[in-house]
Length: 187
Length: 101
Image (cartoon, rainbow over the protein chains, first blue to last red):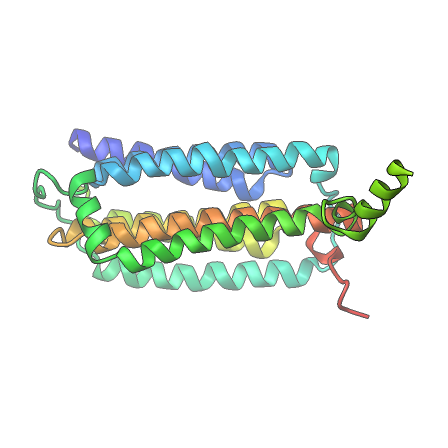
């Protein structure tokens, strides 16, 4: 085994362990830590695949924003973010999980039969770098890029509207009650 | 030898772990994190196939847009979790039955 093979094996092992901790740990904070471990090791695999820009994006967006958002919500919910263990509906859940796993084992068998295991030739020097990626993004992918900005904007506004709830809307500037309270203060 | 097959198998394993976790766990937060695991597996697969065909950067571009869409999904999903917690005082997914009766 070469150094690259050892690197892949280490990253893959850490990623699988992190994913397993994420889905199996009863404490969501430990789950978020497992998710962070998996994300960092997948960023390492992106580096091995010559996708340097995506590795940086992975670290900034996932580890820096998404995991922090998860941790923030878990801390906000406090101890009630951890649900008590019970066995209602356990049969349906375990059956669904087993069926899903079995189908994936079958698919994995087919992949193992047809996959190519030979090492890949090295790509161009600028493959995956930010200059070439930016050229592709702003020529071929400019329309989805602009649409994704609209998507993020709508998602942020929608998230604020959902998380505030109905009660928080009272007392906002422009609503009737706000105007009434201003009237009361004046008189 | 680290070829494309290693990445396909690793991505399949990660996707299966995430899918089983999504189906089995009932904590909404853990379900959202399982979706993250699945999307990361798909991202890894896209980048690996792009590495096998290095004449264009289409796969990496797709992975980029998946990351952007996923940030939006997490923001909205966690807002829904907070909203559910405000109504039901729990984050169990089978307590969310407001439309049932």
